[in-house]
Image 1: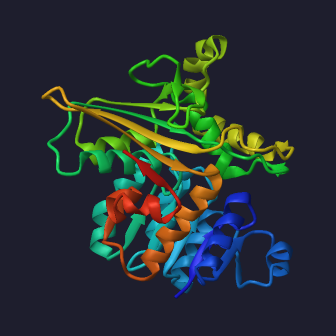
Image 2: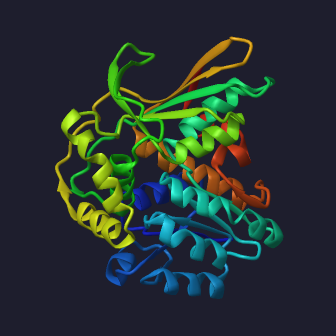
Image 3: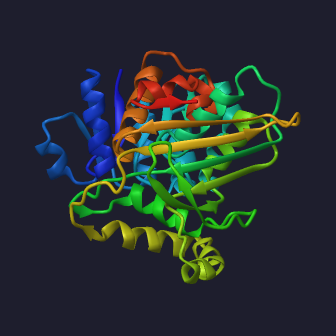
Amino acid sequence: MEIWVLGASGRTGRAITAELAARELPAVLVGRNREWLAATGSKYVVADGVEAIAAEIRRQRPAVVISTIGDYAATASAIARACLPGGHYVDMAADPLAVRRLLDLHDEALAGGSTFVTGAGFGVLATEAVVAKLCEGRDTPSRVEVDALASVAAEEGAVGAALAASIVDAVTAVSARGAKPRTLVLSDGETAKVAGVDSGELIAARRASGAADVTVFSGLAPTAPVVRALLPLLARLVSIPAVRRFAVRRLAAVRTKAAPRPRTHTWGRAVIAWPDGSTREGWLRADEAMDFTAAVVAETAARLARGEGKPGAYTPAAVFGAGLAEAAGGTFLL
């Protein structure tokens, strides 16, 4: 029973590998730098590019494949399909196109006895889990509003592909509802500026609640008026696959200095209204967002490796329930 981590040398890949080791599930590291892989002392597979990775998956048949290589809209389908039949796939996509494409593989995964999980990390799970909790035992709500507030400590070194893709998507995902920036008072009294986005969180919240009216706000989205005025143009440019790949590649190579996280906690929040006029509000509190993401992915992979999933393609709480967020270190405040 092997769990492969694609993009193992990046920040996210290294964090997930450490989380798996803490669960006594050693990972097989997959990447293109043979020298780095060999120096880790772990079992590894050298593969460069989606086609080469997919070929190795089909040949060696790992139980679970975790992808941290980013650009999920272009890479996830081929890699997930290589896991068929019987193998499982996990990624951290937040881009709505990537999330939709993976979920569209539901029938293929179902027929192949595989579980595909997208959005396994902060953002999608942190908001989806709160929505699921608040909707337990209730009728379909009329309106859902969610907020995703990541607090990320900067690590010295390159940004990396996975985080770069998340930033590019958040910067350019202009909300279809045109939700304007606002200041949100957090459950611990701190404040943060958020703005409306169209994201994987929206898809997950809509599926978890059944509501047609869903709005998502993110702390990663730009709130400055000048920047937001340029967002429609940026969104159109980045919608061109070659431009998006270029932007992600350049941002991934940017080197940052170490810096502490900007807020004490990472938060997911939901406010839900029902046709009868009743409303409920809930929060999920976590620590550093990248640490939470690594814990979510590792916990998801561990459960899949134990055979606890169900065939099909899902967002994380849809397959493992809202309690997955607690198992990864989150705390509900309802």
